Image 1 (cartoon, rainbow, N blue to C red):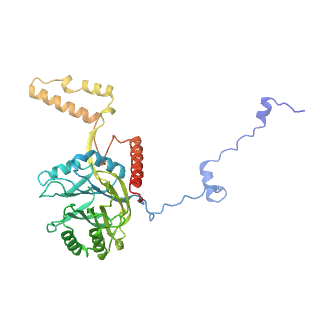
Image 2 (cartoon, rainbow, N blue to C red):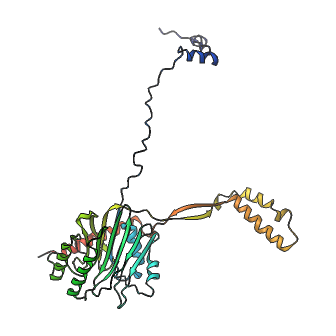
Image 3 (cartoon, rainbow, N blue to C red):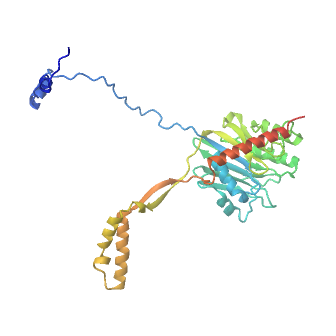
Length: 377
């Protein structure tokens, strides 16, 4: 039978706490080794290694080649492309910009955080080439004699730690094949010995799909003689031809891969992944006041203590000075100016995830329809 204890009996079993030791005696015992603490089982903290890399970039730089057929009429489409594909560089053919208003119109087309250079087609309507790039990329243009068979823009781009020699070419359909062959070969001779990594892109209006015609084959033979390889393997034109080409030297190890995107005009865009880190977007300082953080009661209390209220001047000029100085000091006290750096990024707020999903489905159906249309019988 279990015995039942009263509360007093249970409390009597509680042992009294040992008497505390004065601090001076505890220190002497500790120094003599008679009062030691057991080591805890907690592991030692690992010391931070400063030689480890704090930032390992995973995003590679990308170039997008597109035929615009009037870039001014496709500002929204350009912003959508930049928002979806996130290229760092855009090589554009058929800008249709003019020598007179081209600079202003191209600046208006640039997404936020991007800059641009271009070469218009001076003699006729249409044509023209341009390069739009992140403003953090250093760009230097190279001059060439005027070519009669194609339009060219030649730039050196600094994407640390590498330098890229980028040439954007547009050859009109009506230009002479023989003249183009001679002039383009002359261009290749001029740039063949460049120490920069070479990248030639553009709309050559020469179909190289399946069985290239004579003019296209001569272009491939000429570029191959200079150690250049053509990387686009899917149709870029609505007619099923590969007209938009990407050439690079295999020894440069510059391009990781290419992919053909949706239609921007009657041409598809070509996305080129580069073997270098994507440059950061530019930033700029902005100043503002946090007006929403103002305490209304404290603000009203300080207003009532202004000289403008407690001791207004009789002179008009002094009264205006009291008003301006008092309110300025008041707003500086309750909402001081704050300065911070803001990253300039392109934005397309009308594009939602549902919009992107619809575009992906439309692109998939376009690819399926093109496959059925150009399937050999």
